Amino acid sequence: MISLKGRNFLTLKDFTPEEITYLINLAAYFKKLKKEHVLHDKLKGMNVALIFEKTSTRTRSSFEVAAHDLGMGTTYLDPKSSQIGKKESIEDTAKVLGRMFDGIEYRGFGQEIVENLAEHAGVPVWNGLTNEYHPTQILADMLTIREHSGSLKGRTLAYMGDARYNMGNSLMIGCAKLGLNFHAVAPKKYFPDPALVEQCRKWADESGAEIVLTEDVMQGTKDVDAVYTDVWVSMGEPDEVWEERIEDLTPYRVTMDVMRNAAKDAIFMHCLPAFHDLDTEIGREINKKFGLTCMEVTDEVFKAYDKPVFDEAENRMHTIKAVMAATLSDDWEI
Ligand code: CP
Ligand code: NVA
Image (cartoon, rainbow, N blue to C red; front, side, top):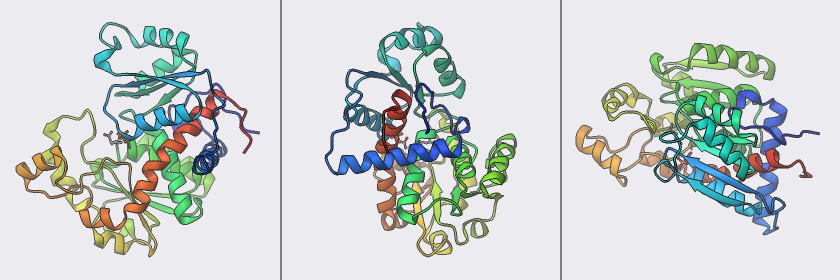
């Protein structure tokens, strides 16, 4: 029997393929209960703190809805309305919050911050996104691929764009552990860190997967089961990098040609938010400055493949629920 009670959830590197699969299965179980309107509020009386040093729609909503579904109370803390970092160290914050809450979510900058929080909190800490990793997103992505393709092992995911940041890193780890082939399709300087690639290749050897880094879009996306992309400039990065990213990554935009090159029933995936039209402030600013009407994905692809993308967004909630439930209790019979 798998028990994750008391564990932190900071990066998928810390979890075995069996443990990751357990979390995905638990999420599918909660999804079914939710659809059938079956209450699953076993964690009544518990409370969780949600720290967001960067903005969020999906992750915050997922933690709040999931916590409430499980019967728990939530407290949202942002840098402006708390002392975190400015007047109080992460260590002291962790010690205080650990006395009041049963679990703590953290979204912010360096991975070392969430690690520090986890070291001192004495209760499970969950990574809601750092510069380096976004592990809860990967659980949702894997559940989505499994729902659409029927299986994970042996499938191939191509990640197009900046493969050195949180999404590229975490997808590579998740794929390597669960036996999906991972293709990073990007200019060389956007390839993931060689040390992480080496580590992932070892997990991939065990799971039977392959990790490919290529600059060639058509080769990297040929017959793949999922084409994944993310924004070209991540939260917390300076505006000055836009020009270089646009120049470097425009050839790696997900277009209809890319989707036609993928497997016949391939899905398009994106962690969201996405720049696919001019209906956002930043989209319009970039349009004014550089003339682009979309960035990492064309509006045509986004609209044609929107079902899996919004399934993926919904699955954030079910998978985050699984992470909180599994690390706070082992009283789940699935
Ligand atoms: N995908 C994701 O993490 O979305 P948010 O930034 O809205 O939480
Ligand atoms: N790479 C993006 C992911 C957003 C969910 C960012 O860090 O902003």
